[in-house]
Length: 379
Image (cartoon, rainbow, N blue to C red; front, side):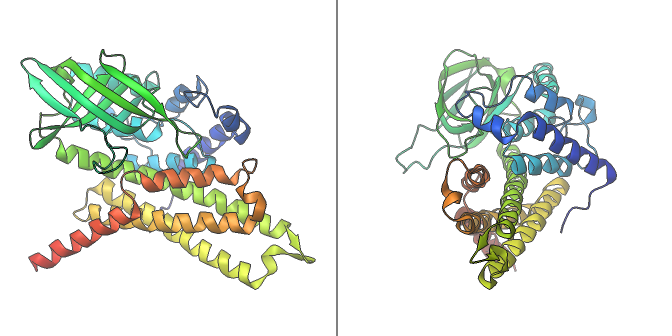
């Protein structure tokens, strides 16, 4: 499927496009390359005023949507983020806001209000490297000690952790999972910035050294967060897929324009049969990726029984063919396509970073195989 935008959605997308073009053009992205935060001080607050942070939150908590489907509306923002290689904690802040929205409490509602206003940001501390890898770190354990909750271990990579005001930490409690909302300034929390292939986003390793918080810091019941974490992962994948498709769109458009402007042996590069075939393949991958990302967003928004299958199919397809498209764009540009001075790499980096987060294409193909085997076993 391809999302058919209402007039309001089109206006919302266009407003985001114009805002990003004005606030974070490519020259600004390059200037902010070594900035610890990665975006101007007023940028995120103004984005929140446009509605970037409220789409997955109920109206009762100050949120709301454009079309009735907040996730579909959010993918429009994410698409523009990918198309502009824009900085900012769009994915983590929205996932955390959505999870906090599920559980009402005075403390969490106050944090949610800050996130919606753009006066604070959040990071979702979920991932950790494979225990068998060279980057292996201690798993996070969340234990209950009287009227306190104790968080110990390491999470990496955590997007936007260095600039986040709050960290929603996922850890193991016995055989189950728990989530704890940890202010970054809490004693025992150490954030170490990491280098990333994506020049416009920031990642970090976060160490929790027996961090103690009141029980009210728990988001949900201890040991019962697996369903919430699964839901958060599906939301995160949908947002990242929309970003990746936006990056693919920019790379394709840039390469198509180049092929018509670049002449070889007196003819436009785009006139050669081989190049035409390559563009046909890329256009097919791009349109299929648009459709797959929209289908995943619709399935997750409706919480359909097959949402896990649809999400994994989209993640596997876009992760694989997005990389193919980016490599073809680089090859068609020739030598200039591999230079730092050319803008193409900004979009390639965004797609590459998204490809490896929340499961690689191989991980999701395996997940699809597991789903198929379980379905076959029940027949």
